[in-house]
Amino acid sequence: MTHSILLNGAWIASEATQTFQAANPATEETLPGVFPVSPWSEIDKVIQAAADAAKEMRGWPGNRFAEFLDTYADEIEARTDELVAAANAETGLPVSPRLKDGELPRTTNQLRQAAEAARTDSWRCPTIDTAAGIRAMFGPIGPVVVFGPNNFPFAFNGIAGGDFAAAIAAGNPVIAKGHSCHPETTRIFAEAALAAIEKTNMPKALVQLVYRTSHEDGYKLVSDSRVGASGYTGARHTGLKLKAAADAAGKPMYLELSSINPVFILEGALNERADAIADDFTGSCLMGTGQFCTNPGLVVVPANDAGNGFVKSVAEKFGAAAVGTMLSEGVRTSFAAGVETLQKAGVEVVAGGQAGGGTGVSFNNTLMIVGGSRFLEDPEVFQTETFGNGSLVVLADDVAQMMAIAESLEGNLTGCVYSDTEGSDDDSYATIEPALRTRVGRLLNDKMPTGVAVSAAMNHGGPFPSTGHPGFTAVGVPAALTRFGMLQCYDNIRPERLPVVLLDRNRNAAWRRIDGNWSKADVG
Image (tube, rainbow, N blue to C red):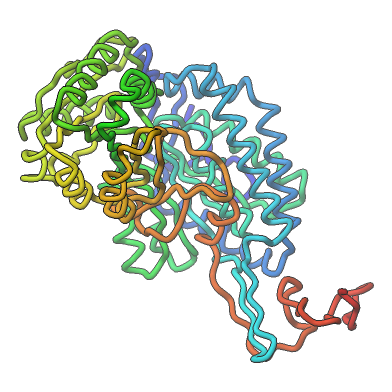
């Protein structure tokens, strides 16, 4: 029996003629759940229901959305065991510490942070020019389509993750497009969302779910005139095609695509603490089988005894470390293709390089090296992303070549420089940092990039191709919410007609609604 889709507050039998099933990557067995590939006829109904909900919610206060998000977080926690079991079967990610102890609490934390931003209107960025009588703020943009990735079944899920939370907190209904790797996990989230909708008396179409669409229908979805914006996390080629369709229709499309997250390790740092840095790098690169968008996929070290010693140490650690299970056969195939591309370009494999080595879908921990001059001859090919448990070390002749490598980089989510603590690397750092700074969204010192803290100051974004726009972040409240808002300006509007957040708070008195009526009230 094929699972139903969530359409306008009800589980509806799909009109699909095509279906799919997920697989357990640890056992390589097909899982029993059968899920629909929704045709345009039902996608159209989902969009219309979302558009109707957006009209109903016009002018609603933020606390309505905050109540839903808080209640949804509670509903998710009530389904912890069910969600964790489903995600473990569909992704091979460990129950503990990854899913139950780390990613699920992060997911509910994100929802509650977004709720607070909605409640306080902090995301609206009110701007008041009293003298000119002009005021501006962010307001809802309309229905938001959210595409979740394969590597975070909870924290970036299309129906529960950061983009979802941001879109709801900004006052928009969400059309969630599930990921084919974890449809059952997504279905359970949808049950929790529907329960929260009913408990908080929100529009039935506030949250809707389709599991999969054809490529052409996906392009139609993001470019539909009734859609306000879309958020996507996943493969570069798919994201760019979706963005092209959205751009052609003038619809915002926020992308997180790919990143190799360069790490520059200076000579003084290696002389001071090479073993500790090798441990840091190994742990970061192999964590979660390397299936993080902030995985350190490119490391630049000096081409001398210190750098060679670092490579030898890391190769030994890679060989000794357990080989993890990849998310899917598709991930392994893509990883193998990336390694092959780099080998053909001239890299030397010093550890791994072969499929297998772990449970189920796996590929040996892979470390590659290439000289700095060769890298600079073809920097584009040597920045081929190998999404998984592998990395490329570039052996640079000197600091000038390190700077040239930094200048040649594509846009990345993160970039890091390790330097010594006594100051011998300071001049080298000052040479490299300005070039690296323009290539990354988040700059780190002496710290591997894998962790992404859910902090108001976090930038989980960066120049293309790491994302589709360098001015926005996918993580961090309230900044992430503005992606799903439109800037609304009010010129010479009477005070009683202004949104409360735009009332003049810079004078001794302001208009306030008291007992349903507008009047002047002291604000101190």
